[in-house]
Length: 434
Image (cartoon, rainbow, N blue to C red; front, side):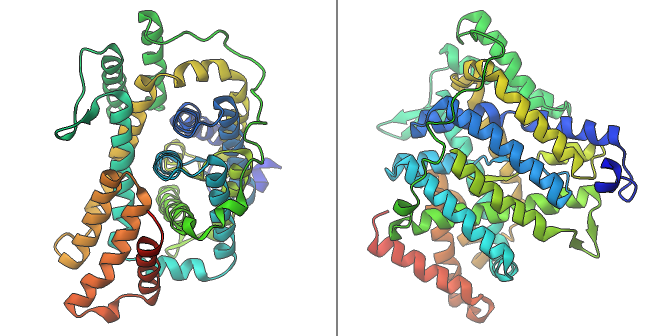
């Protein structure tokens, strides 16, 4: 029955291969179980245990739906970058309550669902300039890497130069560098789950040296979900001032999912006549996942490029995602270990730095020889870390782009949607406090 439902024969795979692929994908992205609750609890003031459970459940439910509905070897979880934007920009810099921020995530998920059920999704994808798409990805990479360096104490505040190098005689900083070097070693050597393995070894070293507090137990009953479950404030998020926030959540999830889908599908041989099989079902699942995540109490849930590791092991069907989902469900019983690891920036910060470095690889896709493409892309990338806001980087990129084309006499080459967005973003800066 499993073989027929997931079309093993049609896609040239078998049960053992799919199980191996699902396990591989889980271990390459399991770091999110530690990092996401760490970011949202420390930066947004949310309950660590509840966010951990929301992370595991949203990843498990959404990956299960992806496997059963779309039959894709694509796993989902709260997205890196989006969780940093949720925490450090929306809640931290803008002072928005995390309940309202969850409401904005919910609205973005609903909008994504509507766009998926109509042809507007394709229209928007075609309208957004290629350079800006890649600039946003790279900018987010720099943003979360900067956060990782700051949290680790490698970069610290300075009155004269704004930022400077921290003190390398600090035990926590040294442990961070050890974790970073070890994780990079495993990645270069192509060890499956290298990031997670680096975190585990570093945690053990930290416990032995007294830098990290050992867990009180190995397994336990799951923590309570009550502190975050259904605590979203949708009404508060409907405020006009949150337009940029909702748009940023929607936009980043929109293209992050699209890019991940194309990359994984290409590697899995799921492209037919240059078209994605069941693409609508994939986007539908992704939008539902974001809605579920906001209800449970976590930031935007999206597709993970780490799914490609499972595909590399031979995964070709949604059964691999089902296996990944089962492992996420089982992980909720290992909360004591996760809590012990996550409280140390020395273990979580290197993940932000590494993931950030992976995201900036999209820089090579930008046409730097065309000044009208390069300037908007550059400002988008630069302003995200400097303004400490993903939304600000996106907004300025969309404002500058049409003006650059207008100056060059290529105004007709800009899609009307871009002009509309530029006007809305200008209004956002003029009439609403940043």
